Image (cartoon, rainbow, N blue to C red; front, top):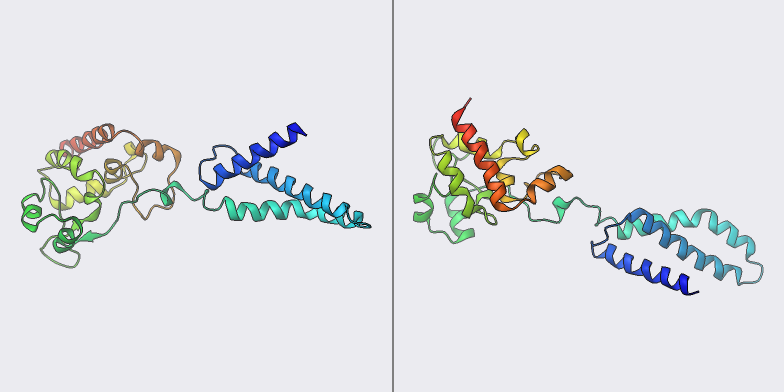
Length: 223
């Protein structure tokens, strides 16, 4: 009885960890274990009733899988969402100067003076001139590290700068320099494989160094 009680206690603790997104074990195995325990309780209750032995056998044939399936649907669904769904994501939108001012509190004069040095802009789609600012560069710690990379790219056109930041790179495990610099993926990525997760989780200084190295290569070999 003591062993059974300990096992049930462990299962409850593991279940709480699963619900809180903190369970590091095999979620499927845990769900099957809990489903089996629940079914055992149901069968025990059925057998206690007169003439219910046959019903108990009939229930056990299908119920374990059904219980496990329902539990998995309720408890594991959110836990299995990619980490992309649980972290802050980089927006893919472009903001007008007015939107940048409204969203960040930066004055328009500061924004314009810092163009191509602290921030960068592109020509708005469908226009021949003007400024639109890729929103990703105002997220998280990006404003504090972006100027170092813009300094390296200072001789490139606005289009070239944007293409550099927004293009997936083999050297970055198919992530874009913008994502590595920010330490988070763009919002339109559906999943992040482990090798990309590891890269995004590196210290900011290390990620900046990787992007800076690519920027120097970009300037040295613009083609």
